[in-house]
Image 1 (tube, rainbow over the protein chains, first blue to last red):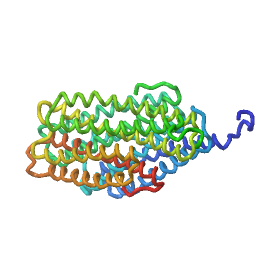
Image 2 (cartoon, chains in turn orange, blue):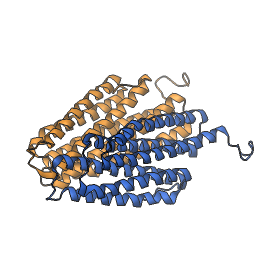
Image 3 (spheres, rainbow over the protein chains, first blue to last red):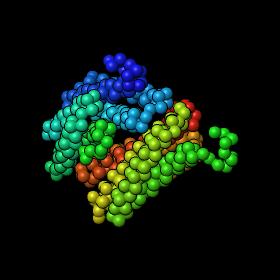
Image 4 (cartoon, rainbow over the protein chains, first blue to last red):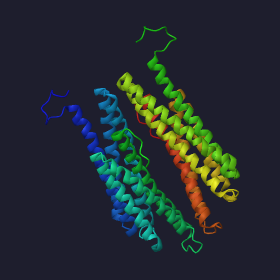
Amino acid sequence: VVGRYPSLMRDQYHVELDGISITLVEMATLVSGAIRDATTALLGADLRVAEEVIASDNVIDALQHDLDNRTVDLMARQQPVAGDLRTLVASLRMSADLERMGDLANHVAKVARMRYPVVAVPSELLEIVEKMAVVAEIVSNKLAVVIRDRDTDKALQLGVDDDEMDILHRRLFVALLDPAWPHGNEVAIDMTLIGRYYERFADHAVSVARRLYYLVTGEYADI
Amino acid sequence: VVGRYPSLMRDQYHVELDGISITLVEMATLVSGAIRDATTALLGADLRVAEEVIASDNVIDALQHDLDNRTVDLMARQQPVAGDLRTLVASLRMSADLERMGDLANHVAKVARMRYPVVAVPSELLEIVEKMAVVAEIVSNKLAVVIRDRDTDKALQLGVDDDEMDILHRRLFVALLDPAWPHGNEVAIDMTLIGRYYERFADHAVSVARRLYYLVTGEYADI
């Protein structure tokens, strides 16, 4: 193909390949907004924002559905070489992780809605949940850049962020297990699930980063 | 290809396609054994069985890794037509769901190990957790048959089983929220996570069944 086109033109196939990457970045950006807004709803007992996050999960799902159809369609029409094929297969997996991250933001928003007008998070846990939420937002923001720029350094950083998430997650359990815990089981159950949602959110982000790292370098990253 | 081979012989390509399906059935069978054994470990505080489940998760992971490599390799070498390509893409997704089901069985076993020699499940919740575990084992057993026989009726049954799982899951929360709950937060947290592991296990099984149904019928099942 090289030389058949003016250097600034890309053939249709490569335009479509780029388009898949662009949609993955778009998904990561939406997911980042979703977890940020879900956190706002959770920590501020903001019902309107919670409803918005819940309603917008469909947008992320639809984006994934459309992206996956385009990806499989491209595989079928273009019979890509092994390298491109691996990129396309990785895209399918990344979109599944990103879609799941949207679900998890949705779950956080649903806890906020369920407990409204009460703030689901008790005051002494606000700081730790907020820190987990900040890490979640950071990893999803970085993820958009990792995919867009094929940035392997940033991909590795996500492993460090995820370690921080795990530390916060353990701190949350320690707080829940305090013998002087005054809030009863309902709050403990909510906080157990909330903690798991944020932690799984970061896990899926790391999974995407790991795939991107492998695509770019051909090696498995220790993240 | 038809007519180029004696009727009882299959060409290499179709042998490999069948092999992928056979490995998916094998994964479903292993996952079913894993959740059954994890339940044994959980309800009987059996450390040896818990350790076996935890150790054998590697087998399921390795099976997925090998299967996915074979699948992508087949795509690259055979340039399959659209129908076969969709089957192969679906196989990648099914193997991801099955691998995750193995992880969830592993999580159940880890709770059993963490609380050993105490039984992690308090006596008044044994019945409900056992029922959730029975449903989990049923769905994974059915799943092996669904994949092996491309059985769409059984695929639909998984939706009914999953509804039962959701009812049990809600019953578990009701029990945890009983104002007379005597066990404190640690047990409540364990049970919240255990409940979620079984429920997610069934969700992933339904996801596999849904994909199989679509592959066979070309229509989306309402499960």
